[in-house]
Amino acid sequence: MIAFAAVYLIWGSTYLTIHIASETIPALLMSGARFVLAGLVLLAFTHRPGVPRERLTLIHWRSALIIGACLLLFGNGGVAWGEQYLPSGFVALIIATVPLWMALFAPAFGGRWINWTAAVGIALGLAGIILLVRPGGSGSGHWQTLVVLLAPLLWAIGSLYARNAPSPRQPLTAIAMEMIAGGVLLTIAGVADGELGHVHLGAMSFASIAAFVYLVLIGALVGYVAYIWLLHHVSVTAASTYAFVNPVVAVTLGAVVLGEQVTPLTLVAATLIVGAVVLLLIGQSRNSAPAVVLETPIRDVA
Image (spheres, rainbow, N blue to C red):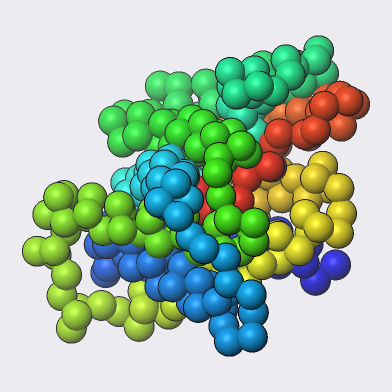
């Protein structure tokens, strides 16, 4: 119960805390520092004295670089960058479609084709996205919406690649390497985007610093450890339920804390997307092949 609560609430709250952290800390550099720090802490933990050490090869780091690029640079980076221009609840709903894209792309990575239940779920999810980005919708009129729409696509591709990519035997070691690789790429992207000129230590608010610390210690470390624990103690389908709880938490927090507007059509879109993920999970649980929705070492497009 504690692990489920951690995955549901912590990961659902990261959309809010990313928004708060990015108010006075440049988004990409903030995300880069977040994952480099979390990755180093996790790597130190997995290589602590008394624990058998596995040799990390260049092939392992190559996999970490590819996964880190897809999940953290484009996935998380797209979220952090996009939340500068779009409501956090809107971004969370877009990212909630990751399982839909994973199911669509799975055959290209050796997975099975979807069944009719999952197909209906994907159709509902796409309808929800159309409602969100339609003219007059929460994300309409913002070209940044296109960047956010790409985030779940790259996240899905990276997650599917990660299933068979060469990686260390210890899942936490693989996650640490992916965090470090992705964090370095995010830092490079932030520098290339000119964010260094916007780093002013004296202007960083207490709220932004506190949110950053929360993202490193709670969002990245506690959330991931809880998720990995769930994968080893409950079914993948059960662990996958975060996919339709997180956006509900994110939209609620965005409305309550940030005062983000939640229109009736946004609620309809949210219902379609959450319902789509539920149908997809049901469809995959009926499939004899292993579920692909959450066979991924890193979760947080947030």
